[in-house]
Every structure is written in C-alpha cells, then in structure tokens.
Length: 111
Image (cartoon, rainbow, N blue to C red; front, side):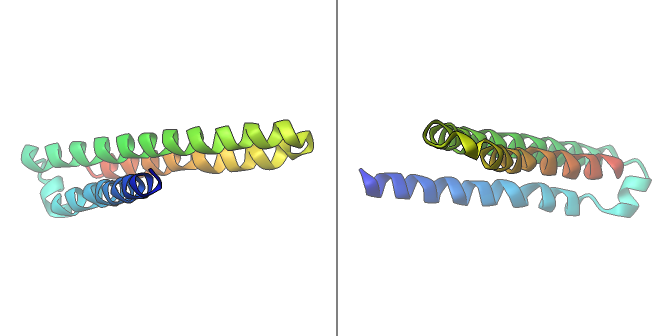
C-alpha cells in the first residue's frame, strides 16, 4: 500500500510539473509581434494558457490547503498555542493560487 501511495504522488508531481510548464509553452507560442496584430489564432492560445495557469494553480492550492489544513488542525488540538504558525502554513499554501492568478493576468495583459 505504501508503494502505491508513493507512485501516486510521483505521478501527481509529474502531472503538476507538466501542467505548470504548459501555460508557459503556450504563452511563448503567442509571440509579442503577433499579439500586436490582433491575430485571433494566437489569442485563443493565450486564453487557454491563462485558463490552464489559473486552473492548475487553484487545484494545487486546494490540494495543499487540504493536507496542510488537516495537519494544522491536528497540531492545534494537541498544542493550542501553535495556531499562529499553523495559519502561516495554510496561508503559504493559499499563495499557490495567487501565483496562478498573477501569471494569468500577465498572459491576458498581452492579448
């Protein structure tokens, strides 16, 4: 059972890396001169790249908050004075979604 869990995490990590680099590849395919001309073909790739970066960021943040939040609640029940530290870790996990939003805004700023 332990090996299956490790293989599942490795597969999810590889998928996350792929989804993380996919918007960058799409955004690079949408060149600066072509966007100035208003080419609808390149604009659709920019919209797709923004959607993937935002979606992957939110899914990653959701998974991170699920695990970190559960561990934080478990730690707070044992030591109530650890609330501040637990909230910091949950906030760091939420930052993943904000990074995805920033990248999406940067991509849409080029359209």
